[in-house]
Length: 234
Image 1 (cartoon, rainbow, N blue to C red):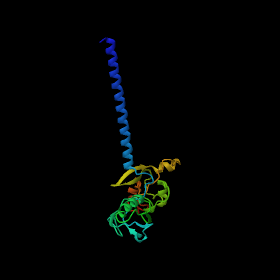
Image 2 (cartoon, rainbow, N blue to C red):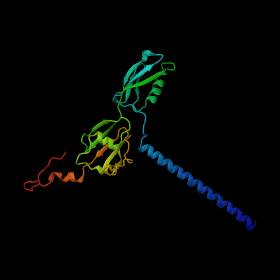
Image 3 (tube, rainbow, N blue to C red):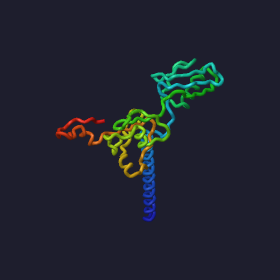
Image 4 (cartoon, one colour):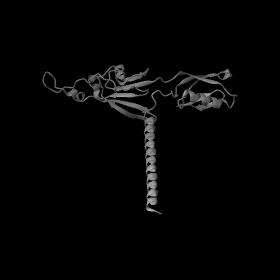
């Protein structure tokens, strides 16, 4: 085997190794991006997810060809419903399309190709919670797109004791609460730029902490004798 032939073989080997390394890098990068996307999907639910049934929800169940099975159903505290001719079925957490398919499957045991429609009558309306140093803390119905600054306004605005620069936005996940982000509304308002003003999701909670001054406000010297006197703090 000549030196030229051996050089050609080594060149092909090195080229193959380089291509394999490049392919592995592409695959690794793709897996990394997929993991990031999966993480985002897990932590941040889709912007407008389908409503999922909760205990206390009420819906009408109608049968096009078997009206004798028409009924109004309430989801019980344990997530079950009791159906005419079927018995108990677990439905908590299902969307309306999922519920419809579940009921079709269950009623197919006693009916031939049942045609079923489900209409929600009473259910948990989308909402957000405002807490902390706002004038009217509480639970508010979420209608349309509402931003964080708009939510604060709906809750009566900031108290004097509010720390505008560190408003916390919490987002509900399947396993409880987790902190999503801290927003500086003071800077947004000062600059007159609300591009960073986030849109709330159903179930979000905003919390406005106290500013540092309010912690000492109760001990501001009195105007008469210079003594430290307690003051009312909202």
